[in-house]
Length: 193
Figure (cartoon, rainbow, N blue to C red):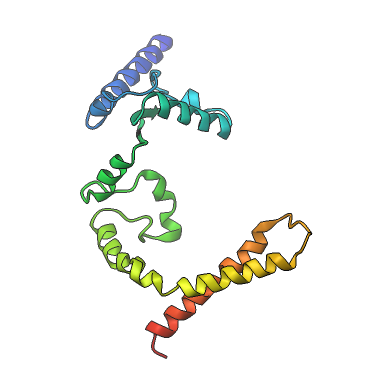
């Protein structure tokens, strides 16, 4: 008797799951091309290997189903696009700019800033920040970047014939100098003290 109840419960859960996966946006996503989807687990089985194997799956899928395809892991659908025109349409759309649930993990740490916010709040903050990175403003920092690049080149020449095995600390020093120079310029130009 208990076995029959368990089996009927599982069948009911599977039917409800199947019904939910064919409602809302899922019914449109199901029409998209993509790798074969297994019942309940979707494409989860394909992505259980190492990161290299997962990368190879995505590369093969993007070649086979170019330019856009779907993948599903349990109840979560994802649409993967590989064409820049698609990105332009998506990123220029102000209606569907909500973040996925992966960003919720960052909210306790970053609150709802530009990275984690969505909708109207994101759009407003993006409008405020965009003029900061205008090409004309960035032109002011070219001299600083050229100077640090020349310093880095001289330092490499001073190394002579020896081989620098770890370049990360070497590049980090000059990158940090360039960033600090930019920050100092901005502070002295725009702050009152």
